[in-house]
Length: 270
Ligand SMILES: [Zn+2]
Image 1 (cartoon, rainbow, N blue to C red):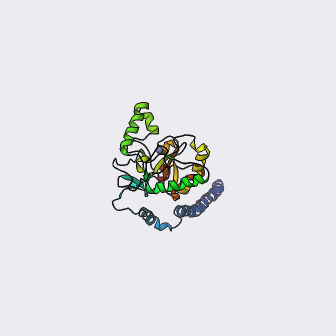
Image 2: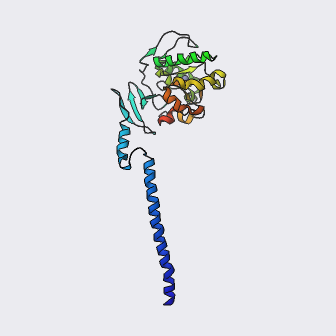
Image 3: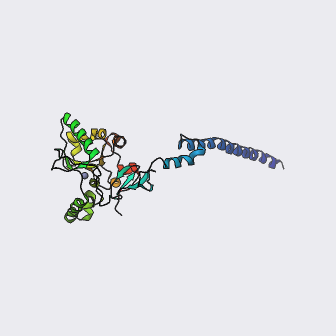
């Protein structure tokens, strides 16, 4: 009997200790959970989380005739509008999101200028005006910029891709040339600069462009080591207009975040 009593003492203390630990645990962990809930949604009280996400959904206002397809991996709005795909209003053209074969820039800049390396070509009007500003600034800094390829029609891309595929095979051609409809050049929003030199950004002219392009709304569209995201090999010469605000976000001190990773989309042929 004595022995039993002696044993009960420590058991009771242990039991109490366990209860205290559990109680302390509940007091400490619960507020922490609440904290993490509020940080993930730091502007609104917890109870309004549902409302906030619906508000976010409605943040993008559709243009007339624009069709909402769904959300991207970064929770942005994927839409189709007048033969092109957009993510929160930014046009996306890649191996997953082709342009309609009939798509062409709605407001082309067709004045004949000396801005082209191989002769007259054209771009979307806004893009051409931004390019001219950039070209003038580059000239002041002592560099010459010329567009080697701007808008390319669906039909031109058919011939271009078929020639590459016949020469190198389809698999190889797909790493550097787009199939018709899948080329960003059909959008009129991009251009190749001063030829197609893979070391362009290491030249003084290219280094200037790499640093200043975002001031005119241009991004390096196919950055180094981002093939898995963009679906294309590095192209030091291909710049795309996205506007200054987005361009500055993607610059990342010259490390260039790919458009695909920012918008949360893939670039793969089906
Ligand atoms: Zn290009």
